[in-house]
Amino acid sequence: MTGFTNWRKSSRSGSGDDSSCVECRVTWRKSTRSGSGDDSNCVEARPQSGGFQVRDSKLGHDSPIFDLGAPDFRALLTAAE
Figure 1 (cartoon, rainbow, N blue to C red):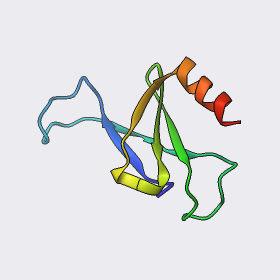
Figure 2: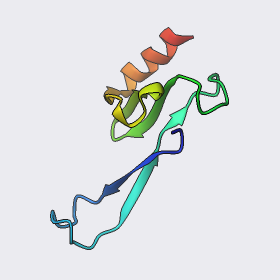
Figure 3: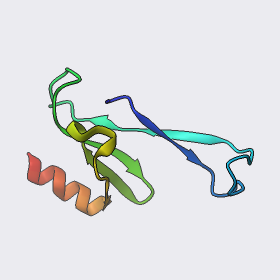
């Protein structure tokens, strides 16, 4: 679950599924303070334009994804210490 990534298509590509484009992916990152096993529960984060996205690792792909601006993400990290 930790290595799951989402593919992102360029906004300059066509909108159809058959349009040719370059895709890139952004990996979810788990806190180094979380347990090392795949069954350890934690919050995962990944960079997003202008901020970050966070999700609950124990819900995996079904987790809601929250968009946070950089100041809000820093406040979350400070509160979690």
